Length: 209
Image (cartoon, rainbow, N blue to C red; front, side, top):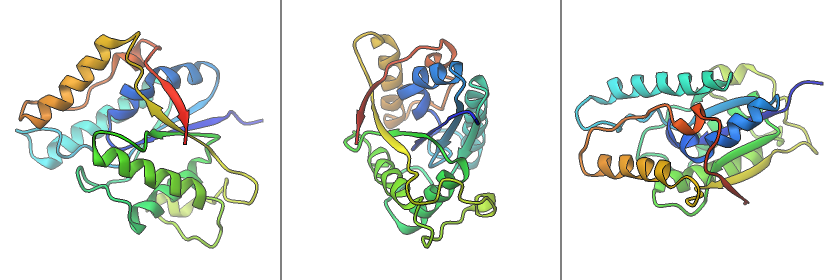
């Protein structure tokens, strides 16, 4: 029997580490195959570097974060502040889910402070529903070459929205929040390898959609 797979599909390269890094580390320890994915490469994540430069940095950081979990990193190559519930991104997300064939999908809460996060939650919910619909065409890069291993009636993914638990890990939460606020105020910020992943524990409180 193959190992179970989890796909953490979030808006930006650091979102999964901040929101469910501990859960992913624990699943990896239990033998799950971990897939981290971002809708965008974080191309607006610096007030000083240009978009391609910061996107390249954050893609590499995403790959390094996945490597800590012996996993794989994916990017759907949307752009920051341009993640909208639309046909193209729904099909890209569906193609990724078909390729990975996860047993569990983690994503943002549908109610969040940032539209990119809320729209990602909508896109991922749609993609999980669309994955087993064979007549729904979905192609994105090399994903189009992979057979839809999960795309048949009766096999679906468990979809979980991830909320940040603030009580036991308040310091990490504050650091993450300060980075987002600093970016909004023009400070130098880009993705980092979260201590939530490196430490094997993290703040997570799951509520099913």
